[in-house]
Amino acid sequence: MFELDRQIGRFVEELKRNNASAHTIAAYESDLRQFLDYFSPPGVDPPPPSGFDVLNIREWLASLYDQKLSAVSIRRKLAALRVFFRFLVREGLAPMNAPRLLRTPRMPKKLPDVMTTEQANALVDGVAAGKIERPHPARDLAILELLYGCGLRVSELVGLNLDDIDRTERWLRVRGKGRKERQVPFGAKAADALDRYLEERTAGEPAIFLNHRGGRLTDRGVRGIIKLYGTLIAGDSSIHPHSFRHAFATHLLSDGADLRSIQELLGHARLSTTQKYTQVSLADLMSVYDRAHPKA
Image 1: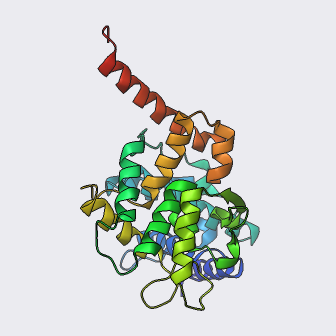
Image 2 (image 1 turned 180 degrees about the vertical axis):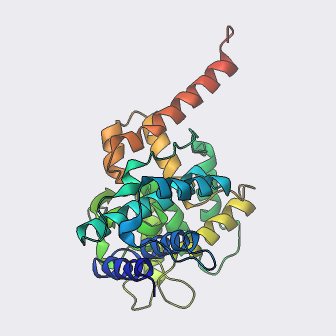
Image 3 (image 1 turned 45 degrees about the vertical axis):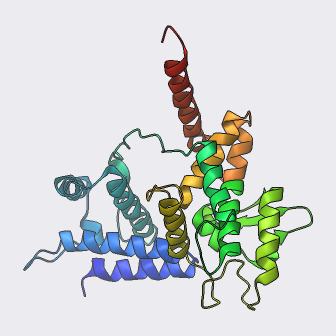
């Protein structure tokens, strides 16, 4: 086994010991194995960890551009490499974190597509009205009410347990990125939907949302549910769980909520992440102006 290969294995084991999420571990390992493959063409041994410098890291980065990878993918791979080299430096196996010296590709400026208030409410109300015959309508309605009413990430939604709900005060304990916890309030409609669902929920599983086998509902399961309703009720197959998170933030901002409060509700570490919703609101405002003002 090559030394670089061995150290990737050690790094992955450390991630597991530190309780990194399964998704993070899988993504890091995949990106690092691809990095190893690039420097291991047939008949060539990869350099040892100490043999990497800015020049050969830049060569690898150029190969990603040649593959026409998106800026998002390249940023993720570079981030994985930086964390790995930080581990190597700490272990005394590399003289420096060479990937840190490379410029991170800029993300294209793209505003998220956001449902209007009418569209979001029509979709949720369509589920409540039972427009589509489904085996677990009460569960599905509770899912949509919490996604739109609380702005949860899909991973946060499926991670909710029964003891995370304060039904008296209407608060949720949410575990977000980096295992950070936050308290999120939920409204009367979400409370009613949750009550109806929990009355019929009988399994002993601690998870709130269950699949048809009585186990915890997965991210993929929720995406399938949202796609189905989006397609059949709204006629839009592109609607996904994060669409409701965007709508939650944008509609709060449009109705006068301040950015700091929205940041807390969404669990954003940086205010700059939340500020993208101001751009969406301004774009909507310009659209209204262009349609309505006689001098537009």
